[in-house]
Image (cartoon, rainbow over the protein chains, first blue to last red):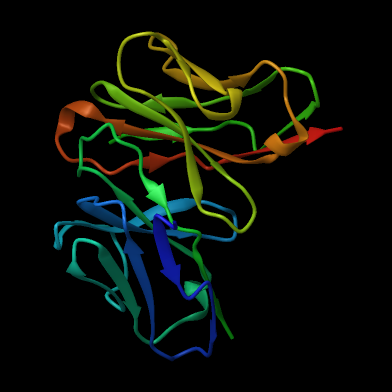
Length: 115
Length: 115
């Protein structure tokens, strides 16, 4: 059983398009995250939601908009895609927010390539 | 703000030899420390964590890590490396005492175990 699943796994699209990435977790966790991993493998948090409420919003262009319809889902919509958006996007979840000592569980990533 | 340093981009070790992947951290309060491993085209997998108590923490796949408060380090170790341990390893820290805080990752260390 996949704990954190992301779709699609690969996304190739043209500059200027709008695309969405979906994430679902079946772990019963309260908190979900979006991370961006660049070509040098550097991992940086973008957003975090706890029970559908936005709790982390890093310095991310407003072309990126997360949406959490329920605590098991966190989607990422990206408008007007740019070349610099090419990266691997990871969804993660954890049992509690913030100061929790619980580990985060990661999906296998969505590899976004902008042509 | 918390930060993590992984001073080595790559660590090379022969199979059967002990391995160490270095990590140092900076937090204003007490740390929660984590190690994750990433295999190609996969998400991060949790290996082990330090919360409190015994400075030597044991985790998955025979890995362990030693918390050293005076040196602000949390090095990952394994007594006998396997070729299958070859992967990208991330150290991460969260500050316990400042309420909600994001998990901050190091830049990763690539471990290459040769047969």
